[in-house]
Length: 361
Image (cartoon, rainbow, N blue to C red; front, side, top):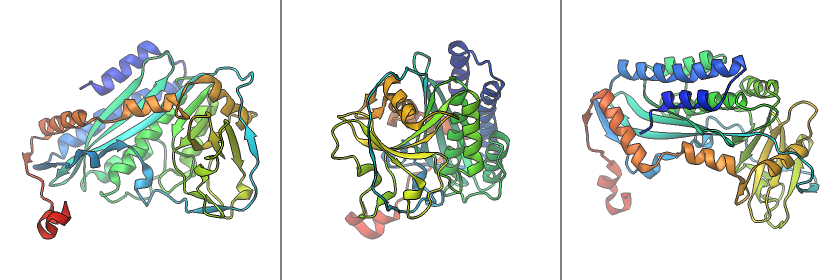
């Protein structure tokens, strides 16, 4: 297993020369985050540990919508006709592209909480891929300190409360992803930073947090484009937003004005539905353009600047692959967690199998 932070920092320093103070500060924060989580793990060691079974239930890229408390985006109806805009690569120049993704793996339950692993990946074309992996022990005793430290010290956000332990892994993964997104904005200039997801304001990702992340990107001359594989926005007839262009063969986009929505959607950017390639799927695409730049032209620059996999930007697919936890990696991380905590290992117990028999499998 790769030595996460040391390799992350080393490869970044070799492959990239950060001339901006913000980038250097974010690198230091990523490095100190590993030390902070390790210290909390050592001070809150588990006495017992039950590994997660099955692994497939706990290994995935981070999906904030799994936490119902994170999402404030209800089903929204569109009430006006939509104008289709053809998408063709014209004279749009190629620009630098950075892509970010984060994954979460639940390693197992302990007598005090839960063992987890987080991984962030940043992909920049023709440069070393950057990846950081963190192991943490989240407990009722340290959850306030971990959450408030990440939110206030690392992201400069006010803290009004701490989520319950059940949702804390998702919340921490979300905050780590926000740190990585800000770092990605400092690795390129006059380019586009691709996010996995949307620019929707939620209880966790507040308007101030998103505004600050967008400001950091704009100061480096970058725009942010968030690509979402699913959306809760619907047409008046019930059609999902991402199904709008399902019958279209040619690359095209639809711009969704806020005035088209029956209910206001709190998004820090412009909403679009985009079909990037003729052989690909369509996606919800939120754009936070640098001042004086046109959203449609920015989307064309994505077309001219990177490859696509079934219509999905290849840099984002690569970031997902770099952040993804394989089964063997989860086993290694579980072994590392056990080595660090030295808990007594217990066999998992599923009451459903006992009370429901074969119907509880």
